[in-house]
Amino acid sequence: MIAFSMSLPATKVAVEHLDPWFVAFGRAVGAGLLAAAYLVIVRAPRPTKVQWRRLAVVALGVVAGFPMFTSLALQTSTAAHGAVVVGLLPAVTAGFAVLRARERPTTAFWLAGGAGLAAVLVFLAVSGSVSGALGPADLFLLAAITLCGLGYAEGGALARELGGARTICWALVLSLPVTAAVTAVAGLRHPPHAPGAAWAGFAYLTVISMFLGFFAWYAGLARGGVARVGQIQLIQPVLTMTWSAWLLHEHVPAAAILAAVAVLACVALTQRLRFEKPKLA
Image 1 (cartoon, helix red, strand yellow):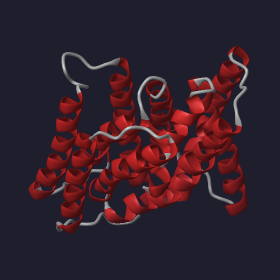
Image 2 (image 1 turned 30 degrees about the vertical axis):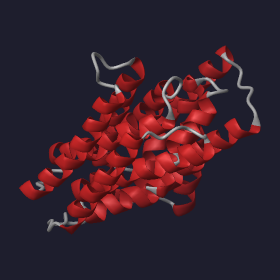
Image 3 (image 1 turned 180 degrees about the vertical axis):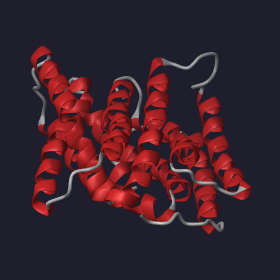
């Protein structure tokens, strides 16, 4: 979560000077090349046909969907606001864990996770994001969260078979033909020219957010259960708001701080509840 918590601020810095499509798919190209090198070095066996289909779901969620929609959202939204909206992600991930990973969380777990979700929704209402109609940035963020939750659940379940590192690496390699094509078109339409800070943000997204961060994340989801470990994502808004205030000098409203404290209490509760761990393949 420490690695992922910098993703929104890094994206915000990058899209201020670079085309959002270039940022979203270019980072996947760079990470895909790193992934291909890793798979060659470790001599990873090729996935089965069924695993390839499941890797396509992972790629749709975390390689294409989340980066694309967050890049579009952060053209007009602040990283701090996006961080709190992303607080919905644990609930979405838990839902997909039931559908895709065949997990069965307890009622107490759903109540604790639901309380965290309620805190996020209250923040959105207080901040004005849901007064009347959702804005384009909020819709982009909701689309990003839905696809990311799907990618997290499918990837966490698949990591029980392939391992965390190989799951994200094969998903990145599978995506390369598409991500490379979109990046090339975006680069030709809007040649990338940006200051060093924007390129630093892009580099962070490529190496950490899109590559190394998933090594630990998918391994953790596989061992501890997608629904249960996924609730740790509730910590992410707190960290992201901290980076946004410190690095981007964004204003963090009191409502956001209260929502962050509430979700932290909920994630602590979900981790204390008894939960049957899934068996590793």
